[in-house]
Length: 145
Image (cartoon, rainbow, N blue to C red; front, side, top):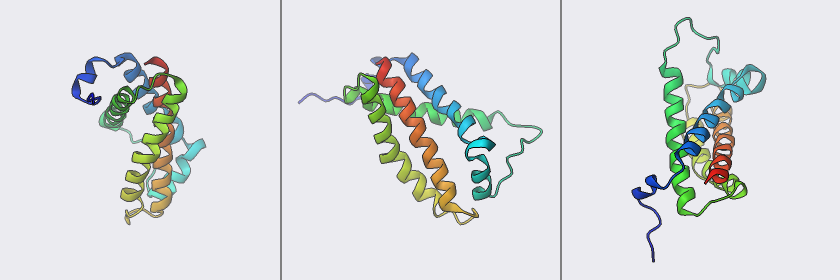
């Protein structure tokens, strides 16, 4: 049986698709966490003030962008190994990664964070972002692969 998953897959990926999918996933956060979407609920659940600080560190943007890139890259590798090669398969791939990995990780780490006023709501909003973001990324990867 042929080994479908190894690091040589990195040379076979469509890197433009990976970059576009990662940026789309990251950009979704600007809508998801906006005041008119889930921003107010997230703010109440987290106990944080969403008012922008006067001096925002680049890390506020760079770290989430890098994490979106890493999980999009991992999703692309899984997509390659599973021969995902169209938008519908990409949607399913993103949904499976989102529900199967991001949701449980987000819920187990967020739901028990007793430093938050509403930890379940906090975790659910974050999990929803990752599910939708990964589904979007999966669709882009599937279409361009």
